[in-house]
Amino acid sequence: VWGGGWGQQTYVDIRITLPRGSDLERTDELALFFEERLAALPEVERYTTQVTGTYANIRVSFPEELENTAVPPAIKEQMVAYSLGFSGAEVRVYGFGPSFYGGGGSPPNYSIKILGYNYERVRDIAEDLGSRLQRMARIQDVDTNASGSYFDRDKATEFAVEIDRGALARYDMTVQDFVGRMNSVIRGQTSQSLLKIGGEELRFDVKVEGFQTVDLHELQETIITGSSGTGIRIGDVVTISPKEILARIRRENQQYERTVAYEFRGPTKLGDLTRDAVIGSTVLPPGYTIEEADTWRWSEDEREQIYFVLAISILLIFIVTAALFESLVQPLCVLLTVPMALIGVFLMFFYANATFTREAYIGVIMMGGIVVNNAILLVDHINQIRRDATLSLRDSILKGTLERVRPILMTTTTTVLGLLPLVLFSQGADSNIWNALAYALIGGLLSSTIFVLTTTPALYYLFEGGWRRL
Figure 1: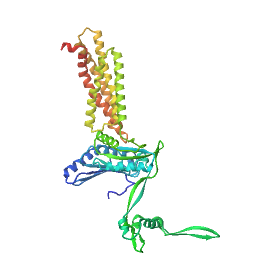
Figure 2: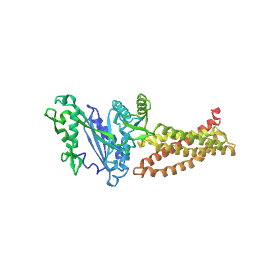
Figure 3: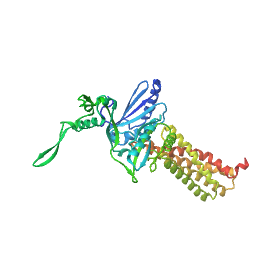
């Protein structure tokens, strides 16, 4: 039984659904994609796969000592990231057990916030926005009650009663009378009167025993008496459906706040464009605002900030090397090792089948400061040979490069060996952080070492006027 042990056993379910008529081989191929990635995770104890024609289910189990840790949610988020890369197939990832706060799902990847001075109006705008989002093919799991942080949402459930006026008219009964009698059934109240005790009048109610425990099925089966004395089964004239609501009202800057969250299945850029288009096409009354809410995703502002930091680091390297070499041309030989190193970074993440996360960007910044060291040592050594010897430009470059091969290789080797334990032995929920840093540094160092010993001398030759002799 797939639902057994909920709330005690911790596991992750990956559910893959393909359109009707899809081949079994395609379904099995998608299931195999996730199996290969799960097999590479030492924290996973086992996984069980069931594949049919258009549906596959993978259940991932964890060792008992890891069930109540942050490892299962971290692995679930990895699977969610992988699931976003498919089109034509619906892939959903669910987490169950204590580690997932009672079985809660993952945070949505997009949220839109509405602010206004009238609570009912803000709710109506959120509901309208939610209905528009649900009509889009790439959008799923729309939640119009997503105010607050993901793990701090206080939600409740109410039952909405929709009265069939046509069916009620056949019993010659008005809506007002029906609501009054149904209210008496829900409250268990049969009569209300006054009683004199010791000269003092006291109000008392007569209620049906057990009315507090009446369930939805019993309520629908309850018979009430119509205006003509005919018995009316409540379920014949009403439709009762559960509806999730907020259990508390949130305000921000003296305005009512409501957040609509949803999952977008597709590329991030397309998701951003879709969100901006939805926000731009929403017509609001005066005094109301709609904006992107903070999410767990990396926002454009954060991405621009990391690019700014990277640009500043490159500028500082240029200033320092320009002062060291007393030249504005030679620093370019040093700085060009950074884009060369990026080739190794991208290849490392590609062959390691790793996700380029925020930590990877930090690793790139660190790598930029490390890989230029070898280039600085090489260029400075060539300059020293040119000052101390009467060799030609070409001979000075060859001699300086050959003399620096061993130190550069030793520096790269010791640094890479020092980073390998982060890749080989890091475990737990933080392993992805250390892996991303190590992949960026190792890939960049290996790539830059090759290019520093080959391309940097050639660039030096060209920048110092050697191109005139070609």
